[in-house]
Length: 199
Image (cartoon, rainbow, N blue to C red):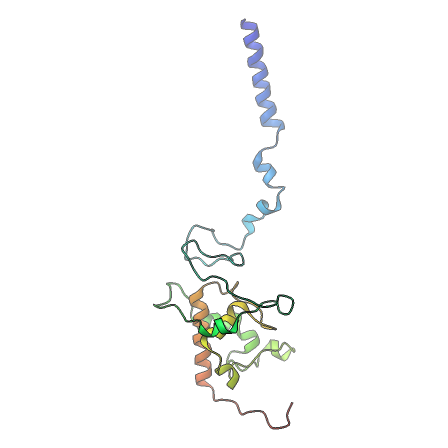
């Protein structure tokens, strides 16, 4: 009986060595799955650890505690991004002060908007000089946009205007950019209308 028990112990120990030395660890397997292997390179900063750290979020994601739902519409074959103008025009900024850590509208505008729209909003920027169309934010047309419309342009984009909601992820910072655009408009005189017959 002892010999039989000893044989089982030796087989068991040999089996353990085989299990630990020959069978791949689940951790090793994860390195062959690109999604797991590259998580450490994610743009997110310590995801899920703190709520006040901006991070790149999946399209259409809504915070667990609630937030702004996606409502954009449009023909995806006609534009990359689109939104419902009627909804946009009724959009109102949230009540209360901005969340702590919100960057100023000028800071966010200078990072994301000035390359095309210019630091003063007149579309006299390097990208415009290279032939990338950008609307001057000082025109009568732009001044007549509602705040909600400008906010929606920032968030969803339209036509040649790309989407920036995935870059300016904080709602308060998008509204801060809207306020800064209004400041630029208030500081600049209204440009003269184009001459008759001009194309």
